[in-house]
Figure 1 (cartoon, rainbow, N blue to C red):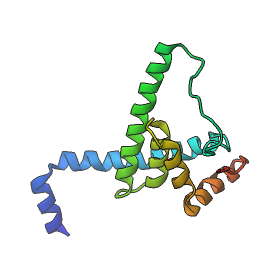
Figure 2: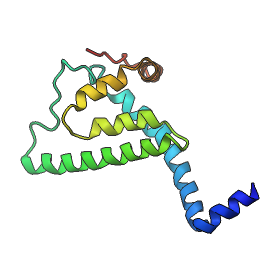
Figure 3: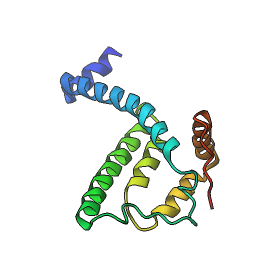
Length: 140
């Protein structure tokens, strides 16, 4: 094991390794807090393709544009963090789902419905929602 650590230290400085470890721990704890917080606040029909979504529809164009930029950047961060959590500790798939739901792109709603429609993911989300007395998600 010590040989492996020495080989890694040849390529990556110890300060970077410590920084990555701290970042991993913070992102793990953050995902344990943020993901349930977001998922229990979603309307039960959020992933239902039959229900239209209009984000900030009645807001001024400048405010809506700034909001969309912030929302998409936040989504990209969640998506990237979720991808990293596939290899590091954390709720990778749920974090990626949150990231995808923030980002705007063609076919997003169908992709979300396909991901949430997976029995393991849907059961995990609905179990989380049940703990907080929220209705289960409905899909089309």
